Length: 64
Figure 1 (cartoon, rainbow, N blue to C red):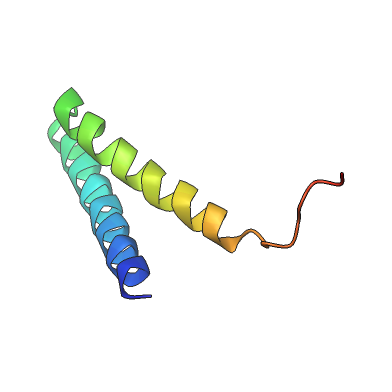
Figure 2 (figure 1 turned 180 degrees about the vertical axis):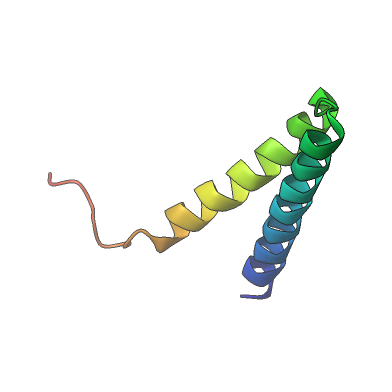
């Protein structure tokens, strides 16, 4: 359970950093660096993909 909380904390922190940094870039008229998007995007995608997979019921096996 502890790794789930750690993953959740990291994903939420990265999401907050992305929102703040994007807001800063919009206000100052600068573009968002592609390196930042390339790092943050997969981290957020991994967390939400993994959390969705963990929430799926284990007893839904295909018939056969």
